[in-house]
Image (cartoon, rainbow over all chains, first blue to last red; front, top):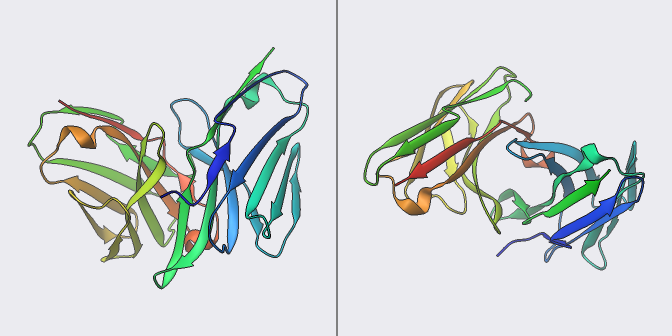
Length: 113
Length: 113
């Protein structure tokens, strides 16, 4: 079963609005990463937040992590049409003697001009 | 895409034939990964490598084998392709493993008829 699960599965907003995507996971983690995937392309790393961090910013991106609730959120402020993509959370946990990175199924974001 | 080249980009093959996908990196990163991406499943790890000739299985390794004879090349082989292996395959690299970010190639679309 997947460690990280995103919510919602799909999100449609207008340019200039904020987009919030959530990720829940099941077991203890070392860090949580967010990736973006444009249609027909590979994944691009956006941001990494470690288990001892609660919030992290990168440009228009804000990620929060609540380890007590086993959840994270990705906020994109002032969205642009170019933000249209799928967004994946990936959790890193120590299992079976090594670190494992497990991806969720993703949130498809559509930003309309 | 961060010095990662996947070949071929597209391939159509018949059930029962062997198929080899190639991943080539110019970043000299130690860790290399093969993932498959299917609708509703996110990315699932097939095999990974933590050095030349050092490889291990991921969560969906059945029917796949890998080889890494040089730092820069990681080959994924489907010994006898089946229709269930129709998917998009992504290679990824990392300098320090899953505890840090992964860089992804552009993917190979494989169709097994």
